[in-house]
Length: 171
Length: 361
Image (cartoon, rainbow over all chains, first blue to last red; front, side, top):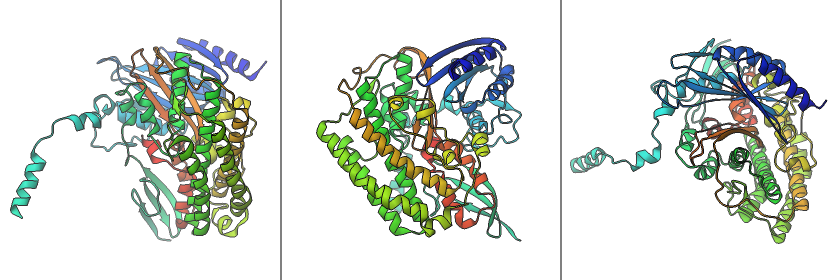
């Protein structure tokens, strides 16, 4: 049995233990598994099972709500010897998701990033400092950030020019 | 012993890039580190969802300059996975050539900076001068020295003629002996280098796993994961090479991994040029991308680069997210700097080959 066959069987066994949908694709890069959980409560158990299979946390992706009150989708991408397993779930509005830092040390920055960009509450963390954004910037910035190109196209006020002209007159 | 806190950055003469370190010291010894990021956060990920799929090719190339080819290539791979596009074989070879040329230039830049921090200015100038051979190669082949715009969705947009192939081989013939016979031996044995780098900024294999470290930082500590071999993509399964790995986990080991990998990259470019098949360069202009999602991974100069892409059938991506190897490597600085000397701080920071523009996006 090849390593990929062994891993495929292990992933199907894992997926059967949790409520949700699972699909698996295979390419020259290895396996690509997609597990969509019905409930965020299963995250820690799934991550623990993946770690038992030798998984490393590669990345976490949070997504903007598709509509108001729809909740937010988070995807955790794990690597197992080159194969990728993505675990997705929806955090309902006002809900929380468990931290994976106790299992994967490098989850810390990923969680801090989606906490500040998407205003997602993560439980079980000791350090909730901002990662990139200043404390003065409110959460959900990815839902309401205005691109610089739009800003620069927008009409500006005359304040700056009036100030300059006034100063010039004073001088 | 008196304790102090030293602020380093975000703008500091010993740092290449704007990061803020609050370093606790006792006398000359580092006892704690707090990293504060966010000084060049540009919101590029958000911008990608306001640009169309084709514009994002140019945008992702501008995330970072040293690994500027890795970003659009990985982005293209995610799109090609969703659209089930089979990239022509010639294009796969050309992608590998572009990537490896960038890797040589990136690695040589990092080891040159190491020499500069040590104060070995003649070595710094020598490595940078040798690196110019690859910079000139990029300028001649791609028309640019950093952002080479080699990739399109479904292939590449540059070609290598017989004359260009001969030119690249000539450039490699110039660079390889300098790198193999002059530069590498100096880093391997010269007392000025080894005294400042061996046993400095040490991490172990367990740290690599715990912190999810990738690239030369991990391979310099015996963690031999290389995406080109572990999750082979493009034409790499048809090329002959092995992952470079050193066991000691110190600044010196990370530099040696980069020097050896530059030599491996030269070998890979030679192999690609020798095997380069005839055929189309791409599947054609502006292919339609259906709704779907994909994860793509490549081995960027600093390690594993991963992209997640979700599309909805329109020409604008619903979500595009990426994570660069520097992302985890910043965090492990607190291990590398523990009990280090103040004078070693710039050396240790440089040894992770940090990229703040990649990290913050």
